[in-house]
Image (cartoon, rainbow, N blue to C red; front, side, top):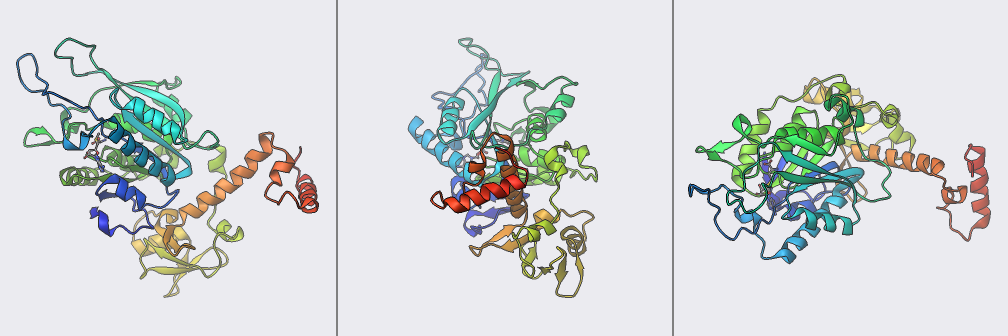
Length: 414
Ligand SMILES: C[S@@+](CC[C@H](N)C(=O)[O-])C[C@H]1O[C@@H](n2cnc3c(N)ncnc32)[C@H](O)[C@@H]1O
């Protein structure tokens, strides 16, 4: 499951996969606008100076691992700026990011993400119902962590929020921004030789809420600090995809085994997986509309799971044809090739982009939706017809006037 950093193809995003290596190096090789959500649980930079002891002098299992250590705040800030910037590039224009942290780092992270252009949607308090006490009794019990939920920019019109699913999860009352969830303990906590395998394994209940709230079934969630793979386990359980990045072999191995043991959600009715019918979902994008809109040309070659041996040609009606003559839809031919009972062809077929690199066709669908939404949004948000015609050079007045007339004929109003 893990793959070494040096063999990553610069062009592609592997889903349901853990990349091994430094997250910055790997993020830089991932394609633009390719994931729906980022969930990040970065180093806390605890800066622990001394070993923590309980009153009985036993050692507290604190986060003193090398991955949490930075020379100073400036080094931590530079690292944070770099990975947050890369995540913003890798997120789709409809995407969003969650970051979790404690008082040690979350304020720095919050300021940096705002400086980078992200726009905060909420901060959420994870209230730990069973926190570790403050053994010395010199401070309050530190009983919470903070999650920041942000979209890519203030101007971003669309992001996923499954309001009704959250309300249902909260007994029919609007979900609040303070979540009472226990620490990860008991059977859920991964161990090795009787010790915690990882010092900061997050509870699955926390990820369940994040993923259900802010993704749809089939979405791809990137976790650049994958640890024991909590994000991947919950993503799989909820019919979503994950891409993880982690440096430590022991964590990668444990995460791989953990995710493999999770029963993948399989549901014909997407509502079972928390998909809420909304106007946008209702506007389904059939594959042939990519041809109608010029985003793919008849005769284009698509590759199933990027495999050159499983190449199909796109026909003008939107069906695909294999070299042996078998044909069908992106989903049907995908089932035929893989033998799987259900295949989401949008995530399995790849094409060669203008830059010569492989891209998954879901990116084309996303591009079409964004274009369509931008047109809709400009129609309802008080933009003038002049704005709508804005792509025409300003000095070409004749063309501008004609474009405005055309728009009026189509029903747009100033
Ligand atoms: C706070 S933990 C994440 C725990 C995870 N959410 C879980 O539930 O298991 C941060 C993880 O990031 C990894 N890490 C830290 N710096 C990294 C880097 N530069 N590149 C890749 N992984 C890194 C650490 O090994 C650690 O497992």
